[in-house]
Image 1 (cartoon, rainbow, N blue to C red):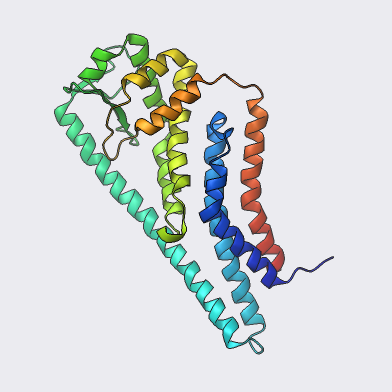
Image 2: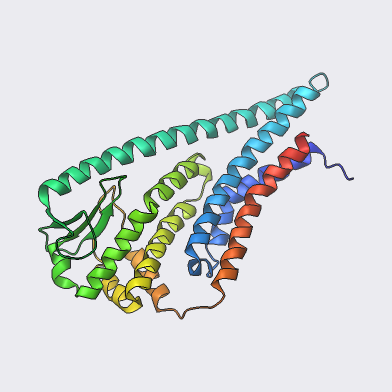
Length: 301
């Protein structure tokens, strides 16, 4: 059995972390097939962030273990490098804990305030209109608005009077199905968790592409739920009508750039064998996480 030097493994893990955090996302974003399997694509982006964390902790663990094992022969330079890596890993851990706490506290507080404002200013339709959307609120606003405010038991779907006047019955139903899909799948928790892991790395060394892509992909997931219920045409017309709408902080919604990409996706022909493509992307995601884990375990044993 070939024995790989621990320092070589640590070096490879360090390179892997750098690629996953900085340059890798710019390659992955060019994979045009990922929007065809948005759920698997979200998992892939999340796996990349987790794998980067594993790589950083793995480098620190291997170097610290090696320094302790050979402490009598280790040079000052080796101790300095080990200490620097250990400090960086500690900073990443602290940033992760801080980001998780901040996201949970600030997002929850902001959404509670927004729900209170919506309940005060908007008309509570409940499901009186037969739209299948309990918690529906209508704002007396002429501009088109449609978004949801997630919550465990007190979620809200908010539309404006302008939206009701602008959309046909099937278009409105598709929009509401889109928002219900966000709430049912708790896409807010998916994004919050990913943002916290993403923010564990300092801004100067990380790419913002993974966070942007995850926000776009959860919109596509909600689009797919609406399309299954009401068809592409209804949702597409609604997206065009609502392309200029504004989503407040704390709500789930999309901007003009996202709308353009989603419309292009809706207009593209359907592809077969999506199950195989999704399985391949899931396999890649699992491999991204397992590879550094196994490398650390084998090296440290």
